[in-house]
Length: 101
Image 1 (cartoon, helix red, strand yellow):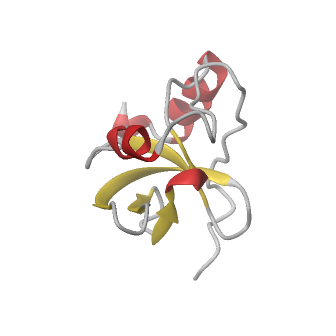
Image 2: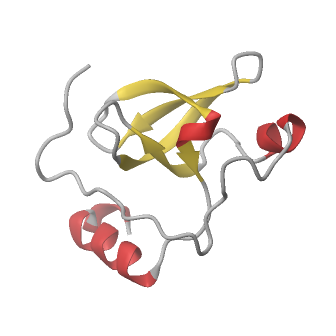
C-alpha cells in the first residue's frame, strides 16, 4: 500500500458526535454503514483519513473505502468512524478540498 501524500489532511477525533467502538451489536454495526457514505477510516499508518464507502462485506465485517487521494482499501468496521465532523474539522476539510464544497 502506498502512503498518503503529505497534503492529505488527517482528522483529529473527538468523542463528541462519533460512533464509539463496542457501542453497537453486530446487526447495529452493519446498519451504521451505507455505500456512498463519507467516513473517517484508519489507514495502515494508524491515522484516520476521510474516505467514502463503496462496498460493504457483512460476512467479514469490513467496508471497501476509497480515500481522497484515490487510495483504496478494505477497512474493518472497528476502524471506521461515522458521525458529524467538528466545526474545525469541517473548516480544514473545506480549505483543503474547495472543489468538493
